[in-house]
Length: 160
Image (spheres, rainbow, N blue to C red):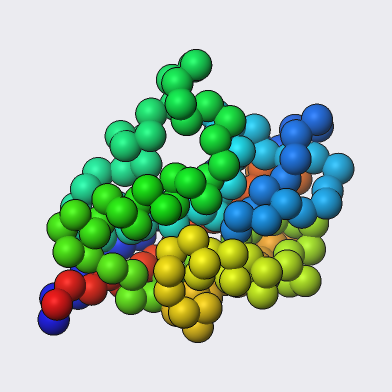
């Protein structure tokens, strides 16, 4: 069996008038993330980690943020499913994912199990193959000032 490791990172700014999507689920909050798609930083970091592990470039290469294209305002779960299909063209599948989201608010711990379940369904894996952790930056930096949310993802992919 061949295994590879990948790392992904994404950040989006928080703005009023947008829904907050994280880990494929909508979370009630006074602000949402701004981006070309639904701006789900968790899924975007996960896609980059998967693509990087398979040496298949990055999310912007496969799903370019061009105004008016088919990816504008797209549900990031669709991008994740397409990413799983892309790495499968080289014979890879997810082994496991470890994801950290940095945000002061909203508190994410009550939503982690729903996020894991959603991601497992999209990727066709066991919920135990996905770890999601939430942290703050102790009020430091743009996440600490609640200007945005950042996500980091590490994945292991496997090929028989």
